[in-house]
Image 1 (cartoon, rainbow, N blue to C red):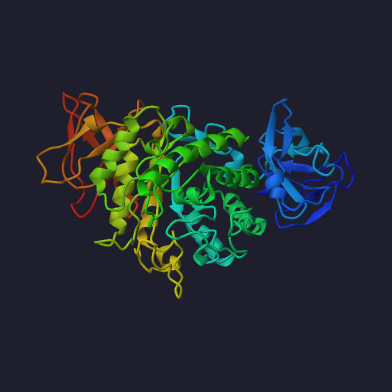
Image 2 (tube, rainbow, N blue to C red):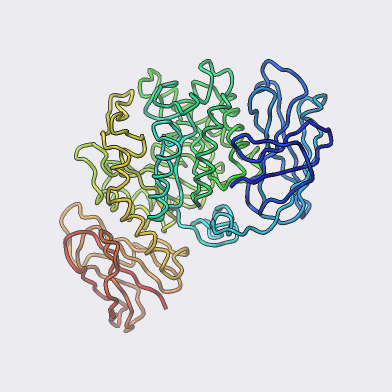
Length: 561
């Protein structure tokens, strides 16, 4: 989602205009147009030789939009004397910019002025038609900038920026599969990974590691390679949910350098329609730590500070959360740093536990959307190995009990990028989660089943106003022990969705007395609707529905008034 940008430089020769993210440049010239929402990139060249520009220079650029509002956009060090800034806006018209350098005597970086002209977007990418995603007005769901509802359907590519997922063929193959199925979010880690110590070779991309091994500075060439992948995801209509680091890397870098890490990410990718996830398993210490309690306390405090810093420097106000060991709310000292509550709802947690955690999140203040960012990974080799049914039931249980804001699926083999000849191997803690190759895991049935669920949900009138209503459903008879309870969401428009993890007769309550209602069953395994039928409510507004068979879970849908 980049675009050529030419501009007029106040200091001739002080700035270059980058035609793409891969390094084609030209001298400054008359401003040209960029379509609204696309990313414009301006390259600046320092007039001074410095031994350590990353640590000694701060560069920002003020962009003033046609309506007079101004965004201060951080620039990033691109190696040597090179600096770049990236900007996007949905406002059409003339955008003027001026650079502000911490060294006002650097004629190549300070006081450079130019213009960006934005024109209407002419493509088909929903992230550019409707805008980046935000929290919806009900504070329970997500929406695009223009208010269009957005159901979060994520896929887990934790190590998708490593060279084990080759660029371009492997990366684009996986993206094509997920796009065709209907995923719209990719959760991906920005170089500081889980399940490995720092500077493990499994974390390298084509250009090596993101930081020098003494953490003295970032390595721009790593992020140049990562740029291609992040831009490609956005071009294909995915929201990149960028996890800045796994939580236990913070003690290695320290809070100050982690803030530098995040400033670099905001500067490079903030103009894209991204979501920020500050850390993965935010408070979890390193697997072999000998001071786990102290590390967890430190990580909770300092990651909260890092998140406050991200909010301070991000001019685009992208959504911000963190990936937790349990819930994002309990991973920070101040929930106000969160835009939504991401859960890790448990690989070993069956449907009832998934629903209980989700509903707890729904009821907790402050009100915000609740999703599971990690639940039951299909093919994960715990005891027993998790199946498509496990992943599917976790999706439905957590998503329904939290009001259908969304969910992130994961499959073992993709998240860590197992190769056919090069499986990921063991975590530092000794766990080996399985050897299924990523291109085999990609085709396992769970991803298609969950993608079909999104299509069903979005077809229901007013789905984005659903609220969990456990009071509207009950079993008709006492079930066997450990049978998960029926789940229900409903809205004021008369739409309902009922999920039965256990296929049993279900009593439906709160219906219009004596009404005949059009309903249908949805098979979550095959992803197909059964023919609609009339359901008659009695004088007390109750009815009983029986699933078509007892072979698996079922979904019952009331299409509304």
